[in-house]
Length: 216
Image 1 (cartoon, rainbow, N blue to C red):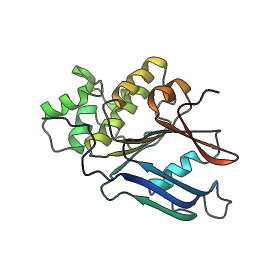
Image 2 (cartoon, rainbow, N blue to C red):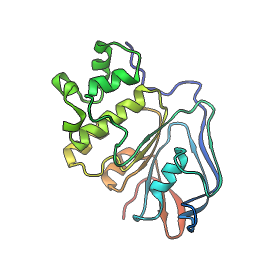
Image 3 (cartoon, one colour):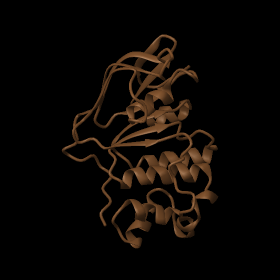
């Protein structure tokens, strides 16, 4: 099997467009108001800012889990979105990495093992139950499931939260296999420096975009 992690040629250049978007919960003031941003194909964006400003709520709204308070969200015609939550609750704890991938893709066991190798699962690692995997291993497995499902735009909500430095490095290595578009909530400036092509900062002033990395 040829594993092609490259962007498909027909992928829309406009991956995501937010128009006057406000997000939050019913009967409460919106957490974020009047966002007007767009993401182009191939971008790797780090979203950062103080806790409680609505970053997870924004992700859940873009993913379709929550309805917008106001405004609209537009995904490109050829975009398939994949969402990784902080809790990784969508992983089946009774399965192992191999059976997880086999349930998400029409491939044989040999090809599934080869695919998992790109996400640093080799040998018996692929047969360990998900419930026995570390947070870092679960993060890499969730990333693998999104890629094998054909997602070309990833929303990653604090993917390196609770990971030690070696686990962060291994997750970063696995993420490097994916050349699609990524929007990630992340606070670690070293990870941002290596990962991000641009930074969105959400604070009390709203959302602003900074090219490059956070230095403060």
